[in-house]
Amino acid sequence: MQFTDTSEKGFQKYIVNELTTKGGYVESVSNDFDKEFCINTKQLFSFIEKAQPEKYEMLQRKGERAFLVRLDEKLRKLGVIEVLRKGVKHFDKTIDLFYRQPSSVYNIKDLEKYKDNIFFGNTRTGLQ
Image (cartoon, rainbow, N blue to C red; front, side, top):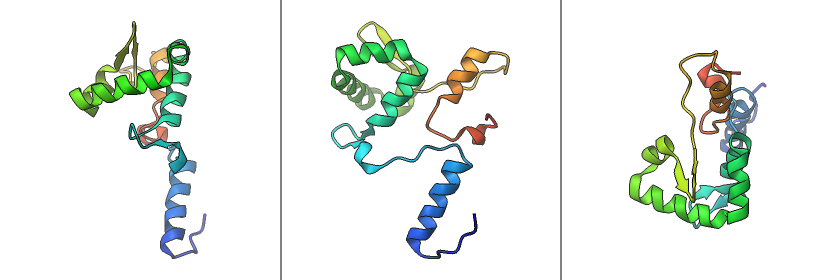
């Protein structure tokens, strides 16, 4: 893509285009951001649905709001890093919010879960 619009807005569009088409990132829109919980709920539940379908079904049955309240409590108490590392225990399930890179490329199941992460583009990690 040739960059010709040198305005601030044009530069922003160029960056977003590069990150989404080449970087593996997902573009977000402000309407998806929940101001009460300070999180993009659409991306959060999309990640959970893709990576943990059985847990996503449980969240749908029990209510998304109840999970968001629990997540908010854990983030305030433990912090972002700890919650990402350990997930969130909700009723009898632990909802994972991040998957570590497996030590072996032969662990296909964990590799697929790792690729489901949305916090960074997959090409950044060399996974495509």
